[in-house]
Structure formats: C-alpha cells, structure tokens
Image 1: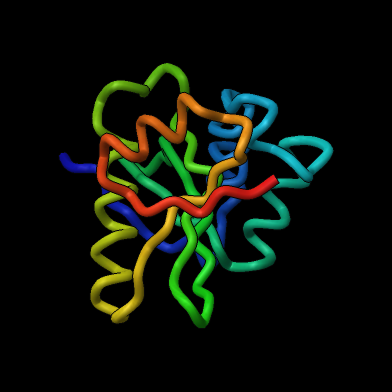
Image 2 (image 1 turned 45 degrees about the horizontal axis):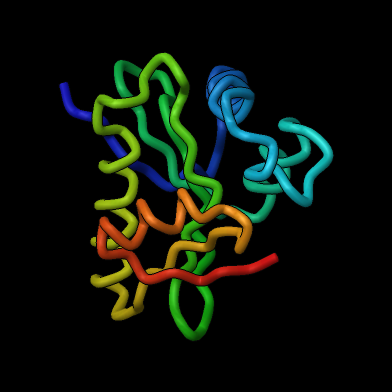
Length: 133
C-alpha cells in the first residue's frame, strides 16, 4: 500500500497525536520560531498549510506548504524517525512539486541559512531554495 499524500484540512485526534510524534523527532532548528512541538502543529493546522503522508491510516511525515502569490514554499518537512529512509519524505516532496506545477506555481524549499547540510541535500535533489534566518 503506497503512502497517500493529502492536505490536512481537518485533523482527527489520532492525526494530532501522529503529528506530535512526527515533529517530536525533528531537529530543534525546524521548530523555530515556535516554542514547542504542540505550538508548531497547532499553527500548521490553523493556517491550513500542512501536507501529510499517510500509510495504513497513520501519518508518517508532514510538511508545511504555503501558497504565496509568487510561488509555493515548502518548509518543516519531517518524517518520523522510525520511518526514515523508506521514501516518505521523497513522496511528500514529489507530491508538493506536482501540486505546484498543476497550479502553475514554482515550489521553493525554505531552509535556514545556518543549515548547510540541508542546503546541499536540497541542491542535489534539484530543488529551488529560499534561505531565511
């Protein structure tokens, strides 16, 4: 069964628990400017920016996709630690790129300027970057 990617408009109680577990595995720089995982998840749900990867009714990964006038921006991509290396993150990236192309918009990956490793991986994947911080 493949990973199903969806815009998370309405989260169930289980979805919220899964999102908390996903972002609990995130490096601290990914949470900024939020004070904790709960604040990040609530903000993403309230803004309607969460794109999530689901397998067997459970969320395994998530990212924020902000639809701006000058293009789409993907940030805060995170996959649960026990699921990493199985293509969930790539599936989220691929689907975000497909959705952006269908909307006639470019997709840029937002990364902090102080994360050269993330920058290098994104460049190797051919992603456009939007550095901040």
